[in-house]
Length: 152
Image 1: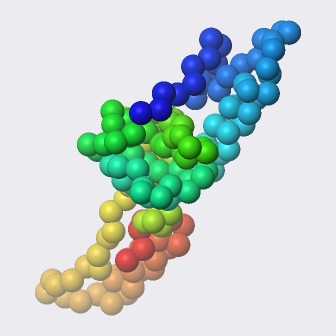
Image 2 (image 1 turned 120 degrees about the vertical axis):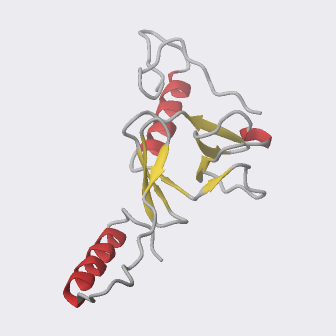
């Protein structure tokens, strides 16, 4: 398993490395900070999986599922990004949002990852109210178009 780079001085939320006056090899710190910022800015993951893909694509991010294995073992709920021949990991913070490309919806982190489940059209009942059902279907379609609800 690849260990994350550790820096003596880093930002409090996402551990972006900070530079010091007269520091040697500044490019390492700056490049690491830019790579992490690139992963987190308008974050999108290819999908959710408990194990790394067999043929990882460079710069592709994944949400690590429960029961992680292989190089992701012990990193449940984190975001993994492929960089060269290794994985870089980001621990989520409350309020973080990611777009799950495979599901076509947003996920929110608040203690754990949350995503909306697909709503179904109301069926049954003694009285059919066509206008109410049409309004509910329009609302579902609007939430799907915004990526709040997954597409059917």
